[in-house]
Length: 319
Ligand code: XMP
Image 1 (cartoon, rainbow, N blue to C red):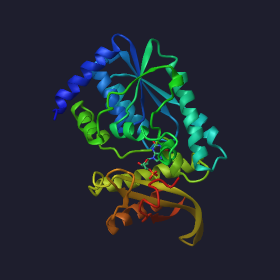
Image 2 (image 1 turned 120 degrees about the vertical axis):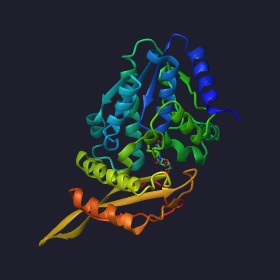
Image 3 (image 1 turned 180 degrees about the vertical axis):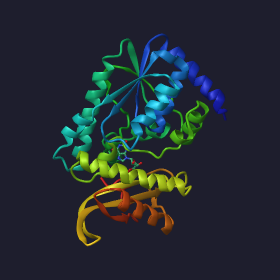
Image 4 (image 1 turned 90 degrees about the vertical axis):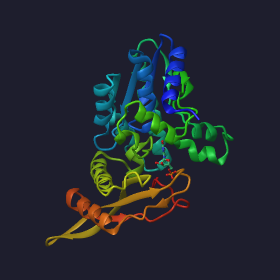
């Protein structure tokens, strides 16, 4: 078995050979895989790397800033942040069907990415954070049921029509190896251990039509869930913990007045492969703190539920 230090050196060396003096573009999402790819490439080719972050308005609280802090302040990489919130929200207006939401987000993402990539001179390669499990899964029957399920998981990433040669330095690695590599490259623990976040972002956690106002509510509730999980020391023990904004209003009472406001569901799961998952058996006290903080601090929410469904038959995300 290789030591990761040697492995990092070896990958850096082979990236240098493959790239030569040409340019590489890397899309950043705030997630572990794309961050590790970018950090690796930055170490390998420095100024020949350009990173693109499309802020689709569906990111978590402070997510754009986190990426900027890491990749333009810390690594000093060439980072292009595209503020595309208006465009994505305009395409999502009136759309309630989950797969249609994903399709529109996917198209907008490619268009935005393409437009930004065209501004970068001499780009020849596109770097992708494909991992070994993605390679195995996408090697299965492309029309089989697995392919349909994975359709929305961005496996394979951006289409070939973008015209770049692909570079996939993590192709031989499993997730835990990617994390170790990330730490070795100097990425902070908070980024390396971040829970996975779906490409379509908060859109699939804002059930029904996505609007700016709903996203404001969801983002605040989500930040409270994550903050409380972290404070309880359970962030690393759970695989994904987040809030979902339900398309339901319910009656409540505040002082002498009747309220009719939104409901938030808390979702937290434990899983090793994301194909099956158990709901996290969180302590009641923790659930209680999350609930009272969300109801007190997030305007427009008067009810909080805890999702106690396992996968299967429920999925981790609600859409
Ligand atoms: P489900 O909801 O199918 O999710 O149990 C399994 C894992 O995949 C993530 N997920 C997605 N990731 N694009 C992504 O990049 C998507 O459209 C998408 N849908 C679900 C989900 O967060 C979980 O980790």
